[in-house]
Amino acid sequence: MKSINISLPDTMRDYIEKQVADGGYSTISEYFRELVRQDQKRRDKERLETLLLEGLNSGNATPLTEEDWDDIRQAVRSKVQGDKDLNTNG
Image 1 (spheres, rainbow, N blue to C red):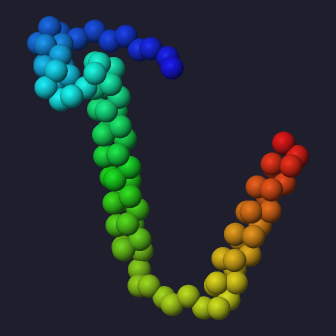
Image 2: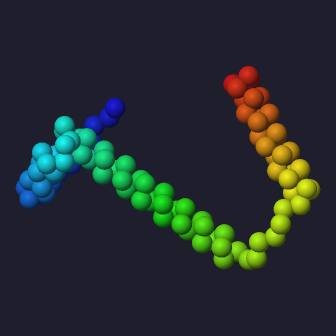
Image 3: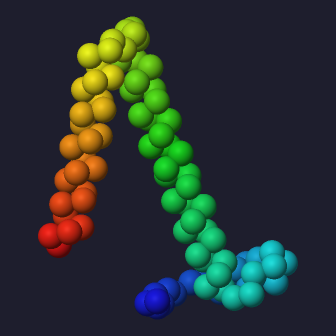
């Protein structure tokens, strides 16, 4: 694990130390890792919401045909086979 050093004003450091003491974190690093995880989740949620809205705004839904399902199955088979080839050759 790599280290990152940051400089903070005293008021922020005091706040963080209080959060660590009151929040059940064992270290300041643990507190910051939790902040980063929360930010990652927030950004993932925003991305998902954007994709869902794009899907909703992309037009009327159409039923999948048997041909569509066959195409999906073939694409999955090709992907699985490609992954197998990479694992055996690489």
